Length: 217
Length: 217
DNA sequence: AAAATAACAGAACAGATGTTCTTGTGGGGT
DNA sequence: ACCCCACAAGAACATCTGTTCTGTTATTTT
Image (cartoon, rainbow over all chains, first blue to last red; front, side):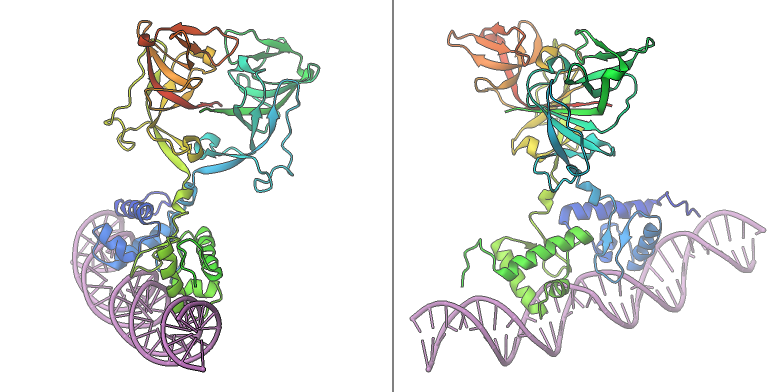
């Protein structure tokens, strides 16, 4: 009937679910006969038949002639953590360390922070900075906080960005607005505070802020 | 020679390493004969012999009569994430929802946040609250932030706690100090701000703050 | 050196397991 | 009705695979 590479039949969905549950419970994949029992099916050939389809549809990967040779592509991603390099500190008066490709390698850099994938949300070029000093209190960021940044040079209006103010020699995190006047307005996270106005050639966007993590105790 | 439940012989260490590498590469455990080939051994019985020892020493777990039924205790822990229930919102003027055992079950509660194990650091009774409104800006916490708390009734001096001020009907996060005078001083995270003084019977500690997470973009 | 124990080798067995073959069923389309 | 197709049942087969048995070699203990 359907071979729309995406849709899974009822039975196939149940099989995939069972494989996942079995895996989570036992830490190894089920055999064909485990699936027969677990899904209340009648024959190994039914499983094999559906596994072949599931493989075609990309829902699973199989190693032929290998017992329990079933891989769920979703499960490797279940290691839902990523190591983000903490490439330096950020403080007013200190340049923001630019993430170059040498420092990029996670293994070579001792300082990393582990975060869940849902914080990264698939973004590339994410790095972390440790905040030093209390100079960013108006941005609701404290000494010791970890800031996660995505390395970009341009941001949209309203996004929070890590910017370097050249003449002031100051790094800070602010909401970025390009005003109709051509000036750039940098708005603190604390809306009660007053914004900073700067000319575009004095502002260097270093990255977009995607998260702030503060650990205590 | 040695049966010191901890030490592994050279060969046994190689076997464990191979199992781990094989797992990371294939996403399923090796068979006995895979180990024979992978470790350059001569017989399946040698592997079985050593696997039995490894099991006794607790380095692996085996499921008998099951092909590839080898578990590495270290690998399940590699799922370094935990789901923390977000059991409610916190805002000044709203009581802090107390984590009761009904709401405790992660599965029953739709709202959870995934965090890495190093944030929890083995603590029990951790839950999360979503901050509503801007009433906690002096604690460097913004609307939408997620606060991770450990459910405790007493905290040490200097710890940041979630407290309920009974007469003010206000929930907030402050550094907690029991003054020599017997009064309780609640110090905002922003040290430029003024502390609040309260009498002990007006203060109800709801939990210890262990982390703040702010996501943006 | 002799005995005891740990570790290994090789083969063999029984059950587990992926795969295939044949047959059956049920529904759509013509 | 017919044919074609997706799908399933059941059996059968060939490996794969954990386990065991017997014997051998090394290492330690007495």
